[in-house]
Image (cartoon, rainbow, N blue to C red; front, side, top):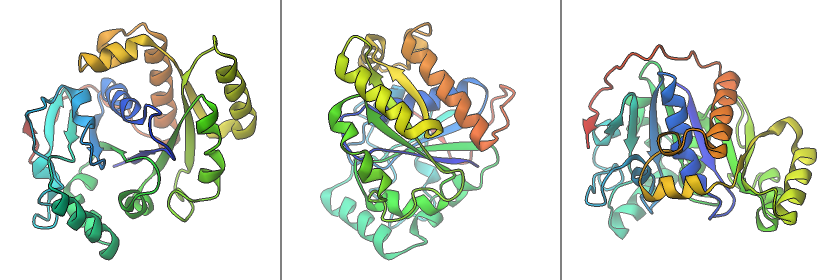
Length: 267
């Protein structure tokens, strides 16, 4: 059960879109993949075609229900999503407080999913430090840090390197890697940022994703980039990053067989 955390020191870098498309890419090879949303905006589900009217999620009753797998939605072949869900301010506060006070809270809630054979979990977090990111990091196998190819993201690089996202080493298993999103060779600042990041990070830079209108249009139609335009530059970049993730974690590529996952319901 590999657990991958996708995080960023700042918002607006395309982190949630990238999380969703990486989930699609990993599932295309036959792996069972669960996309897990820790962001109160509850937007990850929309990338999988879950309608706005669907309010189910795990946070509202997280402090009452020990097994959160019952809130998982089936959204495709071998593809599942566990939404943050519609939660009141009080419910979100109780969830956050439980994350801070009970070090076993996440492990209990995710126990069924964390121990399900062959399931890859890719979790999306709100930008910057958060109680959820800090709580789950010791359990994670890999962290992917998303930056945008602009000066604002570049200025946040020391923030990550100085361990300010969690207050500790970001990942002590397979390590943490960076993804530079929305690179644009037509813009000088983008070229300069990409060049600096490549030299500064070396092998820690897992990949770059080209700025691609297909990604924007795919989001608008609630499709993956692979369904909307599989020959696009962004689709190629994300597929390559997914293959690198598989290699780093030693994931055995699935055989395409569809399996059910306990308590997962349809949308």
